[in-house]
Length: 612
Figure 1: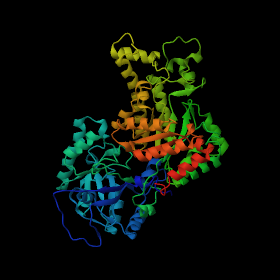
Figure 2: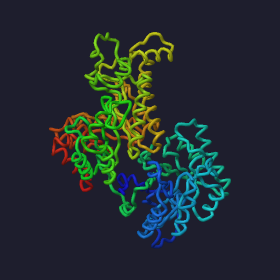
Figure 3: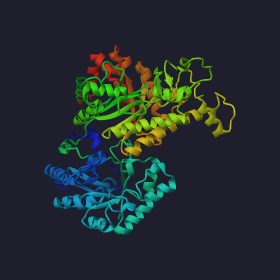
Figure 4: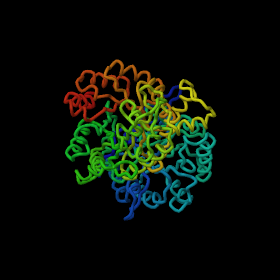
């Protein structure tokens, strides 16, 4: 078993202070009542409570607790003085100032599975424990789900029944009319069966945007919940009632650490890139992997971006890319290196995100893409190409993001990775852009043909807004396809991408619209490559970027340690900037810390609770 996977924040702790004016609620407090309107409430989410079959899939193992495990956890929670409240009661506290017991906790269930009725419900009654069940109305009565009689029996037992939409659709992807039907129509269905109002909504997959929040409010809900604060979570919104995060309990989690639920400041730089360019490679020996995990734990790093794909080479099993590096690593270590990293990281409560350099082939003339398709899949300018090396851009070969073959094969590579490692916490897409050195690219034959067919234009004007918007759209379309692929296999996986800095470079040279990617909920967060070695420029770029982002919790700021190995004062200064601006960082990269004990010491000191 391993500790809950991320920091205390990811446990779904709700820390909200509610202030009202012109209205006074009076009550007589007693020793078991929290006489304030400040709620420090862990909200836990469960899915399946059942015995696993012998042939259980990785997903089943991840989201299922045995009845014995669930009983043990509820007993532990009771023993340590936590008092159960429902989401409706928590909402009443936030909305009307109604009192909560001391050490409140919410136990919630999603989807309305039958095993929740058969196995969880009796255990909850055994301990006289209240819980909230979020129901998908269209699923009620299907073989694996509760029927209406069972839903009503739970409701009549003082449990809280709330709504999880009609069909569990990803709401931000729907039209406004469709989303309204998922929210309002299903609310009416559920209330008609329960004969009482429902007031709390659970976003399917934890995904929402400002439009969805507005619809939830308009439908008459007093509050709404999401997942872990990472799936489109607005952790810094003034009104958190419609964005309350929950921690999704997994089969291998332990809850002894509930005793640590308190307002703990998170690290300034909680993420660390681990690059394949460092020597020796992290995939070359077990000792290096073990040392990485130990350092991350010591430095309060809770997320590792492990590079597993570059130059069209894979450090995981693949039939599309060249996976000889994976085979060599597996032979050298006598085990799968990435699997070892994931296992050891999870034992320390550290997340692992696979990091992929997608469109750059570096200088790999023997890339599988080129063997299969030739140079036609490379983006190019209008200069005549005499030799293969003429396609080099900034000393690298660059795939065309608008080429449908590129999109198809990169999507397959993502599928291979996530199928091979179901325990990955996230996936980060890097090099999702056009080259930005003399940025007159995009003239690959297939891209030009599609542009002319789509726009009806027979001539391309390099300076035209139509052509620039087209290139920007090709980058976003590629990312959209990769995100869809990832989430079709792992709906709850964290999906991120790197963003060029400064913003003007991203927009007008790399044709990368990363502000819209996060503002519209395409990805869970963006990692900004703010790799300026000049602390003043580092800050200036961030201030500009802040103006384009509606939610800073969905931004990680890359600090270019590789440029600051001999400039520890600048490295320290950039840490201070992040703290001052209230932003979270990602150190690029681990190999540079190995080169400089000074940088390493700064990371440990600045990320320590004592320093904060």
